[in-house]
Length: 214
Image (spheres, rainbow, N blue to C red):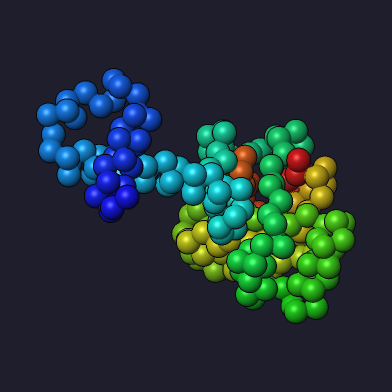
C-alpha cells in the first residue's frame, strides 16, 4: 500500500471517529483542510492528556498545584486555622525530573535532602509542594516554615517561590515570623496549596501560627 493510500485511510478513520454534528460543513472543504481539522482535533486530545499527566506529577512538581483549586482565595483568621486545613498532594520523588528539582533547592542541606529522600523511599515521609510569597510586595520579610520535623527559612519575594515540604497528613505546617524591615506593617505572607490560595494573618517577629494539613 503506497503512502497516499495510507493518508487517505488515516483521514477516513479520523473523520469517522468525530461526532457527526462537529463535522458540519466539512464535506465542502478541500481534502487538505479536512486533514488539518482532523489533525487539530487529535492534537487537542494529546494536549489534554498531557495536562492530566502533569497534574499527576509526571512532568514537573509545579503541575501538582496548577489544576487543584476547588476553593476560591481566602484570608484565614486564627480560629479558622484550627478547622480549615490545607491540602497537600504528595509528589513522586522516584520520578527523575521531580528528584532533580528537589536536589537543586538551596534551602535544605545535602544531608537533609538525603534524609528526606531516604524517608520517601522507605515510605515514612511524604513530600509536597507549596508556593509562598509576600502578598503586599517585597519588603524584607522573612518567615520560617516548619513541616515534618524540618525547617525552611525563607526571605519573601513578591514572586511566588516553590517550596518542597516533607509532611504527614494530620500534622500542621508552622509559620514563624523571623524578620521584617517595616515593623508597623508586620510580616505578610500568602501560600498556595492544592486547596487554594491562603493569605496568613500578619505575623510579628517571633510569632507563630499553625495550619493543619490533610
